[in-house]
Image (cartoon, rainbow, N blue to C red; front, side):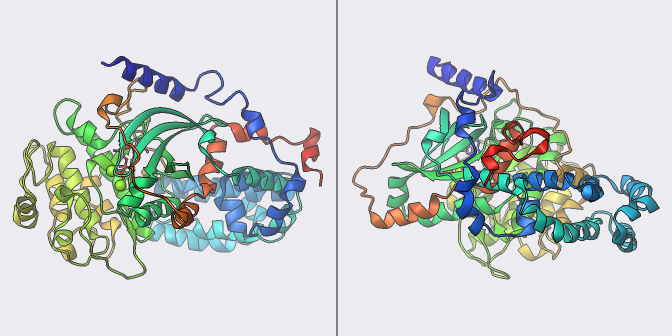
Length: 533
Ligand code: ADP
Ligand code: MG
Ligand code: MG
C-alpha cells in the first residue's frame, strides 16, 4: 500500500474517532458565540410565526419550546403525553394497546388532558382497523392544537424564544470553505470530487460533493446541479443522504452531505470475498432501500438511478440512497419521459422511451435484490461488457434465471418487480410501496421499527477501515481551460449558495453535543445578559 494513502487514511480514521475535543476546533465556543439579542431584531421581525415549523419541525426550536413549557407546571402533562406519543408509534401493536389502555385511558390521564377523552374511541377504532397506521395521530393533533394557542403566543415573549432567534442568527451566517477542515478524497463523480470534510466548530464529519464550475458550464449542468441540490434539501429521511450545507468557492459548488463511511453496495457485493451477500443483509438493505424509495415517491420524486454503487453504508451499517442527480420531481399526476439512468439497470419502459412515473424505481429494486443474492446483475454476467444494443434486447426479452440461492419468496418478489409491463409490476398496482413491503419476502422485517431506526444492522463496517479506492487510484479533477465564467453564471451560483439547511444544521448542533453545552441560561433560570433587550 502506498504511503500517501496510508497517511491520509489514518488521518481520516483519527478524525472520525474525534479525539480529545471531539474534533472541534479549540476556538469552537468563539465560533458559535451567540450574537447579542439586539442583533436579532431583523430576524425577529421577518421570521414566520408558524407553530408547526417553529416548535415541532425545527429540532432546536422544538427543544426550546419544550424548555419553555417546562417552566409552566400546568403544561407538564401535555409535554409528558406528547413525548410518550412520539415513542409509542414505534412499538408493535400489542405493546401499543397495552400502553393505550394502561396509561392513556386511565381516568387520571384523561383528567390531565381533559378533552383527550373524546379521541380515545377513534384511536381504538383505528388501532383495530390497521395497527400500522399512526393511531395516535388524532391525539397528537389535539395536543398540538392546544399548544399552538396561548402557550405558543406566550412562548414568543420568553427568553427561550429569544435564544431560538440567537441560534437562527448563527445558523444563517454565510458558509465558506473556512467552515470546514478537509481530509482525503473519497470518490469522483461526473462534475467533480467528493472529499471527507469536517465542520471546525462542531467536529461533525460530512462528505463534500464538489461540482467544478467550469465543467458544469461546459456540459450545461446548471439545471441538473440545482435540481439535485433542491431535491436533497427537500427530502428528509434516514434512508436518503441529507444535505447539510450548500456553498460556493472560487472554483466549485459544494454540497455537504451525510458522511457514509461504510462504502457502497457494489463494493460489498463484489469485493468482499464470494460475490453476493448473506440473506439477512439482503432483507435488511432491500427493506431500507424500499423505505427510501417510498419517501421519495411520497414527495413525487422518481429516483431513476437505483444501482449498487448509489446505495451507501454508514458507520453503523445502515444504508442511504445517494446521488439524486437524475431524480426528478413530477407535478401531480404527471408522467415523464426520458432515457436516463445506467443501461444495465434501466427499466424496459425507460429504454423504449415510453412515459412513466414511479415504475422504473421498482424495477431498479428488483435488479438490486437480484444482484445482492446472485452476486451479478440479472441481465449481465460479472465480467461481461455487452454492447448496448445487446443489453437492451436482453432487458426487453430475456427470461431472468434464478440459481439455488433464491428461495421461492425471493424468486417471487424479483419476478414481481422485474415485470416488464409497468402496469403489472409490483409497486405499481395502486398501493405503491405498500405492495412491496407486504410481500412475504419481507416477512421477517418489522417496518415500523426499521423506519424508527430501531433495527440493529447485522453487519457493521470496521471503524478502522476506509471503504474506498486508494487516493492515487481516484483520478484527479482539474479545472477546464478556456471556459470563462461571467455575470449570468453568478446568478445561478447565488441560487445554489444558500448556506446551512436549517433542519440538518440544528441536528448537527444537537448530535455533537454543542447545543447542550452552549444553551445555558442565567442562575436559577434567569435571563442571561446576552438576552437582555
Ligand atoms: P456523481 O453524481 O457525479 O456520480 P456521486 O454523488 O455518485 O457523484 O459521488 C461520487 C462518488 O463519491 C461516489 O461513488 C462515492 O464513492 C463518493 N461519495 C458520494 N457521496 C458520498 C457520501 N455521502 N459519503 C461518502 N462517499 C460518498
Ligand atoms: Mg454517481
Ligand atoms: Mg449523479
